[in-house]
Amino acid sequence: MIAEVFKGKNANFYRNLFMSMDYRSFHKVVPEMQHKMHQEHKADRQKQQAIFLSEIDKDLLKVKDDHELKMLIQLLMHTVFSTIAEAYRQSAFDPDYDPAEAIADFNSKVRWLREGAKKERGETYD
Picture (cartoon, rainbow, N blue to C red):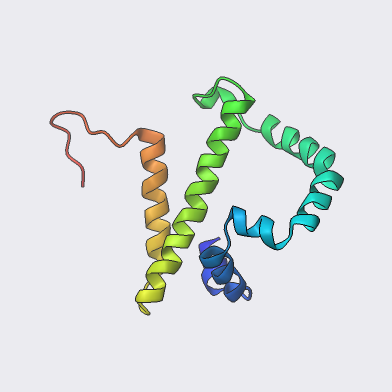
């Protein structure tokens, strides 16, 4: 995904999206369209979401129910988008910025979520 966002045929679109658009500005720009899409596709989205959630083995995760699973997915998606936005900010100041750094940053964030960020006494980290 990082390669597509930074170097794909729609890279300029993604750059503008991640650098400029947030939840509030999206709703200011297209409120009627968003409301119409929401009404027309709500049932379809709910069905697709239920199928998606049913495919996840919740026994492997520390989630009590679908609500917590949705929260975890939101956290992961926020991590994806914030990592991409930060990479764009860094690339604006450094023309030699390598998008591979964003992948490494994302992997570190996911590792912290998966394993925790706290070291045990005496534990070393490389």
